[in-house]
Length: 419
Ligand code: NAD
Image 1 (cartoon, rainbow, N blue to C red):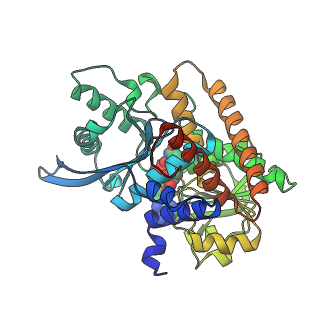
Image 2 (image 1 turned 60 degrees about the vertical axis):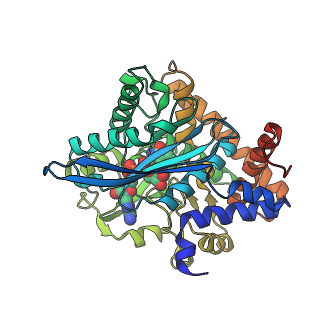
């Protein structure tokens, strides 16, 4: 297969559905029905930059499937955003919601831009411009966005406000999740993705007969998911953080580094590099460290056929979406390590988004308690399902398990003639 096909996340997502359909012996029509998003909107968003010039950015919203419930998925601001990436991410949302048993469908959005080189005013104009262009397909009962790479509660607040302006000032807090607390956000949403991942890693360690106490941890991508993974790996798992990295490179200290002071250092300097008592480490070397738990928490396709033979982690917990290519999956499988697939490992974010969308009363403790229950339940169900199906990886089991739920729901709704 040419490398281009292998690294295109949309083709990867489609291939993974294809494999699940075949393994379950489902008719080809199931693949035909689910291989493409129901709808994708492409928008040109023209805003005035601080320089005084107009600049056009391209944004997308992909709605994959809403058999299980309202379309749901984050919005990403990143230079590499494109239609295929957003389509793939929307497919993964459909399957993720099905894996963890929440009644939501799958969507995703994004804008090709580099927020690190934009002022707050420019980001606000872009966020509002995006909503003016795609707001016609959003709504609390239609499609509900949330934060993703390089977006945050402030961006969600601007978007919610713009949506409200579009509809004559009607109060519409449920159009978006991941909002600031003052605007109806959920306590515990910021750390939810990482918290869910830590619970999954803890359950996985139990199946290996080991403990996470004292376990060594490496975090690839020290942003929202990665930073909270470091904090919570210390707090919840008793593990030690030996390496972290961001887009500018990584650092290492085999004795362990304090997660909160790493976060403070990144906040103050803009990067993890230069942290006291640490040695520099490339992103490539970080991924290949012999650690107990590795959290890929940045972008897609970071573990490929090239570096998979050198991966030494015992548990890989995919906080990022699609960090491992299918070829790398095969290599890792033969090495006997545990890969907690993104469909399960990073589902904490959408679970707490679902809580936020449903209600606004639980405090952080209650939210965390319910998230823990859902993650443990999802892990156990998937683990059991994998055993029953025999000879499938946990990722394949996740796709198959989700597919059965999605197809059953479509059948009940009377969609398509394949069932
Ligand atoms: P973020 O923007 O907060 O952080 C991304 C981090 O990755 C940054 O620290 C950045 O420096 C780093 N990074 C970027 N390119 C890199 C590279 N080439 N090598 C190493 N590091 C690099 O984003 P986030 O919200 O933490 O999302 C990270 C991943 O988690 C994404 O795949 C996202 O889809 C997934 N995810 C996020 C959520 C959520 O709730 N935020 C939920 C589910 C999944």
